[in-house]
Length: 125
Image (cartoon, rainbow, N blue to C red; front, side):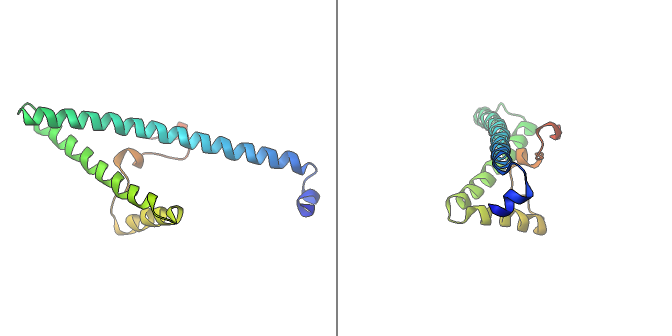
């Protein structure tokens, strides 16, 4: 604390601002995650409705392709969910994403691919 006090004139103020900035960033990231999961929820409902129509032979081939793509996204999410339960998840999940990028395999669901760290700079679909 002595070193920190010599660097800054108001070390407690700097610490409180840093703590506040950290929690604001966490809240922003959680809001982005909430929006992405809501999008996945809507896509999954559409997928289930398409499969229901397919059982009655009322779905088109294009709708079926979109439903199959969403189903693969669900499987990708389940695959990452298994690693989230295991110990050392903050280390293993980024390592899996990194290895997937090297190998050329898309590990994340499609709705998570268009996300940047800034909420205003998200890519439009």
